[in-house]
Amino acid sequence: MKLKKMMTLALTVALGTCVLAGCGGSGDTKAPAEGSTGAESGIPTVTEGKLIMATNAYFPPYEYYEGNEIVGIDAEIAQAIGDKLGLEVEIADMEFDSIITAVQTGKADIGLAGMTVTPEREKNINFSDTYATGIQSVIVKEDSDIKSIDDLQGKKIGVQLSTTGDIFASDDFGAENVEQFNKGNDAVMALTQGKIDAVIIDNQPALSYVAGNKGLQILDTSYVEEEYAACISKENPELLEAVNGALAELERDGIIQSILDKYIVAD
Ligand code: ARG
Image 1 (cartoon, rainbow, N blue to C red):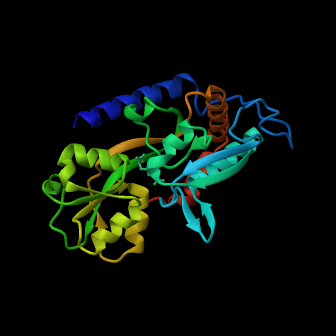
Image 2: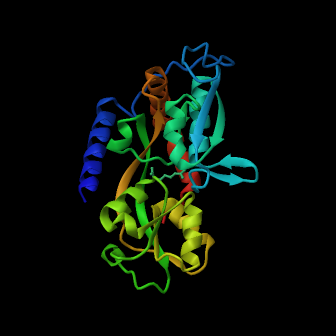
Image 3: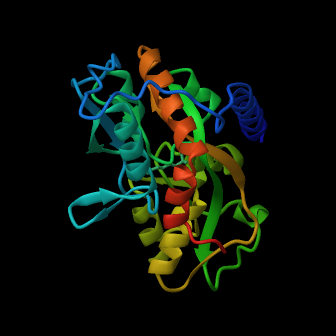
C-alpha cells in the first residue's frame, strides 16, 4: 500500500500548489484577441495555431465516440482551453499507454484522458493544475462472492493497461492475478463472460459500463481517490503556464463545473 500513501502525498502537494497559485482564483491568461492564433500569442505548439490533444477515447464520460466524433468532459475542456488560447483543437485517439510518449516526443501538445497525477508519471511529464477527481472502483457480477476489497485476494482482476487501476491492482494483489486489457471496455466484456472476477477502473467509466451491461454492480467501498490533470511536455513550460492560466479562468467562471455537471449526474 506504499504507493497509495505516495499518491496521497502527491495530491496534497498538488493541491497545496493549487492553493498557493490561486488556482480557481483570478487567473490571468494572455488570451489572444479574436481571430488570432496561438502562434501570434506566442505559445509554442507542435503545429502552429493548433492544440493537438492525445487521448484514449474509450473512457466515458471523459472521452468516447458519438458516431465519428470524440466527445466528453476532456474534449470540451480542451475546446474551452483552445478557445481561450486562440488554438484550434485536434484530437488524436491512441492507446492510453501511448499518450505520455506522444506528448513527450512532440506528436501531441497535451494529454487529456482522465489521467491521474502520479509521482511516477511526474518524472516524465508535467501535469497542469487538476480539474477533476476520480475514484478507483471495483466492478463485479451481481451474484459475485466478492463483497469487499479484501475479497479480491487471489481473484482474477481485469484492468486497462498502464492505468492507475493496473498499478494498484498489481501492487496490492500481485501482477500474476491481474489481466491487462487495451480498453476498459474489453475488461468489462471479459467480466461479463466470466473470464475474470472483477474489474478495477475509475468510478465514472465504471458507472457507465454498469449501466450499459446487465448483471454487473460496483462495490460500495471505493478503492483509491485520485486527481485528474492534463499532461504537457517538460520541454514546453510556456504551454503549461498558458493552460494553467486558461484552466484558472475556466474554473473561476464556472465553466469547468458546468462541463462536469453536463456529463456527471449526481447520485
Ligand atoms: N485515471 C486512470 C489513470 O490515469 C485511468 C485513465 C484512463 N483514461 C482513458 N482515457 N482511457 O491511469
